[in-house]
Image (tube, rainbow, N blue to C red; front, side, top):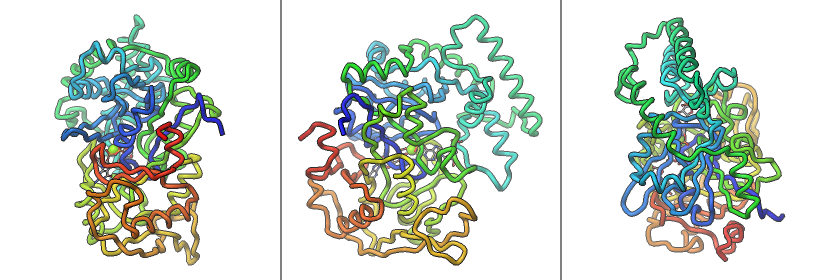
Length: 445
Ligand code: GDP
Ligand code: IMO
Ligand code: MG
């Protein structure tokens, strides 16, 4: 297939936090443009290089590479307060940002009162909390679909403040109806009025960034031969349509989301890079068939430092779930797999991998789409661990045989090659398989 003039997509195949940010940062030198297509500050993408760690929430993970155009697409929801804090962290002069960070005017704004509503809805759910990051994502996308939302481009219209006040008062009324008092709320340590003030200050800064229409910007760049990487947030199993609803986020996190969230025609999608951890994690509520409580689950959390990049919450941990991975590969049309955090399994004597489930007395090797997911019993294959550090390994082929066997089991199950393995948080800790298809795509052979 000729993939010239097509955008590649990189996204998560599990419940988020697969290490997408790190991989985008590693691949960016091969691209002219990195474009986020959905989600918002619920995302936390971690980049580590030169001894420093950065966590990006809205800004694409190509931002540290000079000359790369970073685009925040129409499908993203923006919180000016949070973007402002991210810009402070980046410490990149405005003049430089003017040629490296572009925001789509169609992107919807997360109002402070969307965050209030997020808290109010979660509060009301009692034992059935989604475990939202409380960044206002659900309410902002709700207003978008209800056609009552405010877009970045609307800030330039004369009646923006009227619209803002009117939407805010509706939100306040709704929160009151949910018995949620606004004075209970602290948003990133600030009271509602303090947050609102800082939000408007952030909006002024956001207005200084170059504004684009992502569909035009991205398609024209492709027409001119620029290489584009679309960066996903969250993960496939958190997708609003295909995830474990209602324990999901409010956007389409899958490949099709890149079409909607950037204005790309389906035929303009090239390679799809699916990122997955060598095990599984989930933060927040919802089914997680291979979750391990205590024991190995604790070890995975400690070795993998599995605490949320956005909220600091401990992540739930468990073994790799192959039927779920295969489902994610299917939904996204994944062409290359990238496995992260292999090093976290370094000290495991035995590694388990889920190859089927027992559901209602039946064994099946595909994800059940209905029924009680909570009652699924995973069926595991047990493999020997490699019991050694991966630090001194410089090529994919030198990896311990036990790890290569693990990779073979995964590839055999999902029928897509694992081209890259990440062995640490740093940008340099990356191994690309000799002769892997991804090398041709990146034109580095
Ligand atoms: P994202 O949301 O998919 O970008 O992932 P996060 O940044 O939320 O979570 C991934 C975490 O694992 C971050 O702390 C990364 O620095 C770290 N990380 C990424 N790749 C690796 C890896 O191969 N090994 C280890 N030990 N840590 C990694
Ligand atoms: P990145 O891009 C992991 C989870 C939340 C919650 C559910 C809904 O860093 O991988 P929301 O705030 O969207 O209303 O939360 O989705 N969630 C994530 N989990 N990584 C993320 O993003 C997530 N973004 C949302 O924990 O269970
Ligand atoms: Mg994350």
